[in-house]
Amino acid sequence: MIEYLTVKEAGERWNVSGRMVTIYCNNGKIDGAIKKGNLWLVPINAEKPLDGRTIKAKKARSNNEQKNDV
Image (cartoon, rainbow, N blue to C red; front, side, top):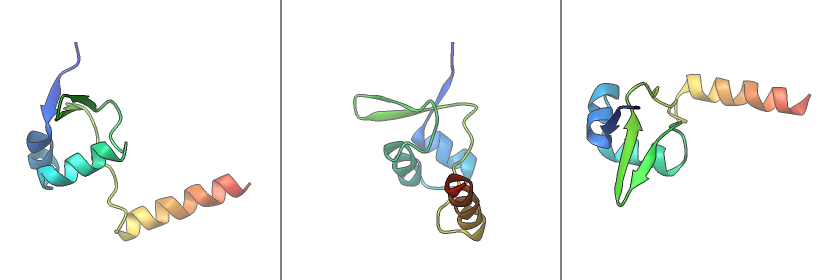
């Protein structure tokens, strides 16, 4: 059975707000996240998605776009 964290617990683990985790979930950026009623549950082994505003994320996005052009 898969164990889950609440968005608040995931946020504490990733050092972001629970609201940011909810945004990640709504945008489909966390694999395996499920919604039960109005509550998002995040798999305990899920990795924090890249923040699209950082240089690291911009480089990753650029690399993905280049791969798709080939």
